[in-house]
Amino acid sequence: MVTASQVRVGMAVRYEGQVYKVLAADYHPGQGKMGGVMHARLKNLATGSLWEHSFRSDLKLEELSVEKQPMDFLYADGEQCHFMNPDTFEQVDLPASVIGPQANFLLPDMRVAVEFVEGQPVSVALPDILEVRVAETAPPAHQQQESVWKPAHLDNGVEVMVPQFIKVGDLIRLDVANLKYIDRAKGATKG
Image 1: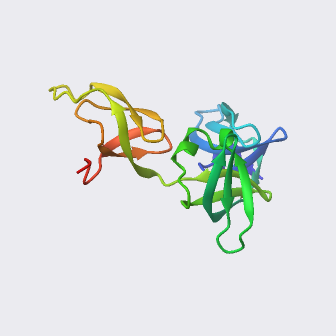
Image 2: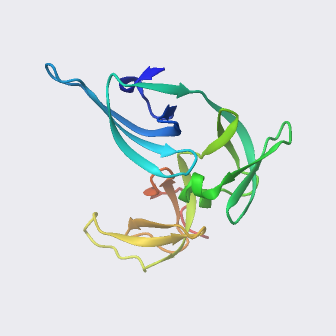
């Protein structure tokens, strides 16, 4: 058991019979007689739905251990993503809806950490930053304004916002968790 004030990003907790993974945790200490509050963004591991909630800092939550196993992504068949342990050849399935939009970044034979809670696969830990190619976007515009962004479709169909100077074929670095553009990758254009 942990108190809500001890909750950290990446933990798995049980609250009111549901198992959640902590995606964000922000503790606000209280003043005087007011107790502190933990604002948390949680992902329900059974349904994949997101939930933002504020907990009293002294509330007790059951902490569950998260075990990470390196596994190779095999393929996706619509609703399910299939992974294999390279040592034991054991295969597990995980619904694409639970992985979320990041499932589009899985490539065959890509080694990722599959997270298990109570022996069940619950999520995939993708690299924080991936290099992806822009498949479709408006022509580049070299304006003085740095804050003007435009939509771009990546090779895998995901749409992200990029700066005006990015063009089709550019290789960009992407914050996978937030689906946000970071910068243009080295060797950024198709030769």
